[in-house]
Image 1 (cartoon, one colour):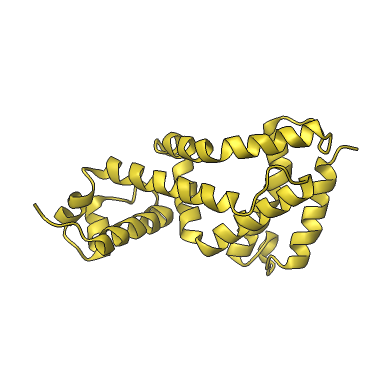
Image 2: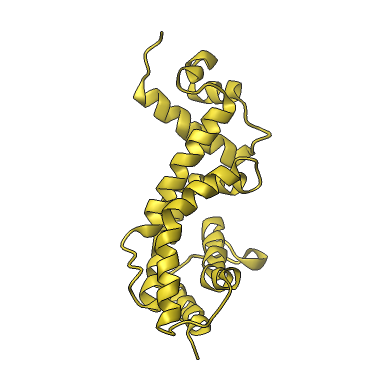
Amino acid sequence: MRIRDAEKQALVKQKTIELIGKHGFEGFSIAKLAKACKISVATVYIYYKDKDDLINSISSEQAIKMAEAMLKKFDPDGSLEQGIRQQWVNRFEYIKNFPENSLFYEQLRSSVYYESFYKDLTEKISPIFGKFLRNMKEREEMEDLSLEVYWAIAFGPLYSLIKFHLDGQSIGGRNFSFTDRIFDDTLKLVLKALKKQ
């Protein structure tokens, strides 16, 4: 039996994320992965029994990593403004620091692997975010919104601006950078929309 090498396994994981993020699942194979890692196909099978095992394993790890990033310094007992601001900071920092993971996540969303990823993610974040939303409603800090409407208002603008930032341009090819001023101005409008009138 061949010995596992932690560095090689880390490389396999990273290249899987990069390849799937750039080329999607249709453009991904164990042979292409092995070539990108400069290892033999057999080496990949030391760590994973097949392609599904590889992708499911990495998806689960990424879900946990994303959940930990979202929950960093987040206090479910804090105010609406504190909670949403921390979420914006956490999500922006995560995507800025790990753009290839975000591309991988986008590919997962339209694949058979997404259900497992989403389950792992929500198991970690749902109890804490659920408590935050219940607190907002109990304290009457926030309008009574469905989860979908809440999410669209709270995070839709953030993800649009992050996409512009990562692309370096906005609508019509205009140069764009997600500055602190844009962050604060947009967050102020989002909070105004969410707060109980």
